Amino acid sequence: EFDESSPKRPTNPYASSKAAAECFVQSYWERYQFPVVITRSSNVYGPHQYPEKVIPKFISLLQQNRKCCIHGSGLQRRNFLYATDVVEAFLTVLKEGKPGEIYNIGTNFEMSIVQLAKELIHLIKKTSSESDMEHWMDYVKDRPTNDLRYPMNSEKMHNLGWRPKVPWKEGIKKTIEWYKENFHNWKNSEKALEPFPVRDPFSELGDP
Image (cartoon, rainbow, N blue to C red; front, side):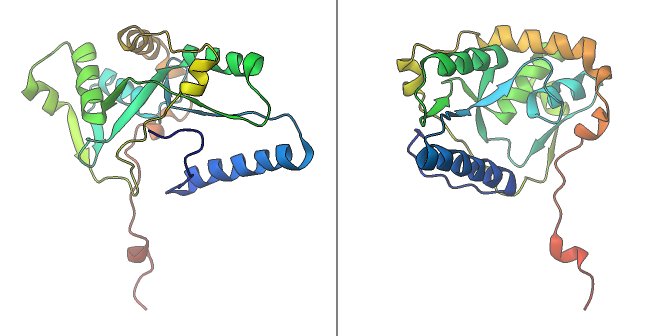
């Protein structure tokens, strides 16, 4: 498990930007004692999340009778944390956290992307048949540097009195219902449902 002191090893530009932001903010604390607190969270899900993220993407695809796009093997595992639990964590940090500290906001609940797809297929398509579930999954080329898993140790948050409260089954049902009623309100949402674009940069250079 990664704790707050684990070294940062970003593997893509997005992760690198977050690591750089941490360093920038932390330098203000170390140099000027500016009161900052840094939080790192597990994969957040819930209503109102833009559908490019895996849970709203799979839900929206299935509700449109389209297949879940599984990148690579689908064996990558993620820890999913409901949005209201994250809000409670932020409030706890604001009230009880210490300036200059880093806090992991995590959960022990973990599942693979294939498991996630099957769970959503079961809830939305009302089937438990393995062949039916395979029908609703489309395996596509994996994203570059797609981490297998990144479990977080949240003991520091537990010591502040915070723990996640919303069970997975409750949170995912609320999320499914919200997207059933509200997906059409997103602008440019269809673009968000496409698989992550994987390009070969050398093939685009052309012949010398």
